[in-house]
Length: 296
Image 1: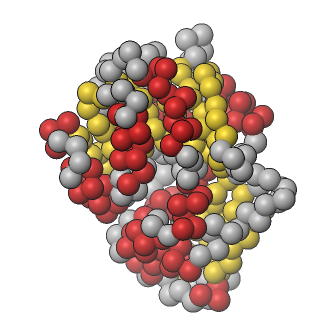
Image 2: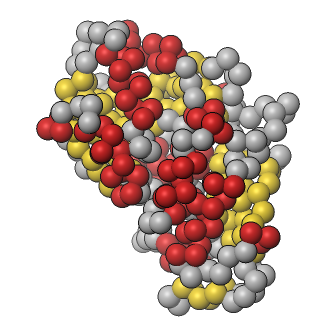
């Protein structure tokens, strides 16, 4: 029987996934952080990189489905760029774990796109045997950008969920951040606003936080940015008890390589149609489809 991976489960594992730092009052810090230059530089891929979609979409009409689109600003830029290149969509779907960010996305998107063409869906992707609650028979392009996959607890759970939500004609565009030995991997995340969004959620669940107990580091072996918080007093959540001195991992963000991505996508039932790097060779877009010869 599969264990339900709710907040209680994660706390029992000394983990608080970063997705919770995008909810409740913690979302207010992330909203400010997401408009900062550090964040924009981290998720930025020039509009021309989305041109790899155009040959696939120009003669077809798809639904547009974006996962984790924050406040919708980047979504609107992509949609506008594709529209300027004679690409049009039937309907627009926006999915996010955070009700707060999804509400902001709805306000921004609805100001530019007719409301009857849009649907905003609160949903947790880390459910491996589920699928996004939309009609999977409609052809769609799924957008999953900003290295969001690198921030989840289980890549396989998320990719299987997306796989289950797709039909054979769908396209899946995913953005990932690559690692580079010459790059300081902490630059974009060593940010007071981001730290406060993480600490705010700890406060929400009644952990007395101190800035000195917060540690951000880069794991060179696994190429992962990690935030940890050390408890300076015992903590109890429901029937889960954590002792003073327990280290809670409250953020992780993996960095990728080409070889790792190829194995990961193949294992989860996808084939790579194309990929594009930005000028720094750090941010990469992969365009995927379901492998017609492979299931998960």
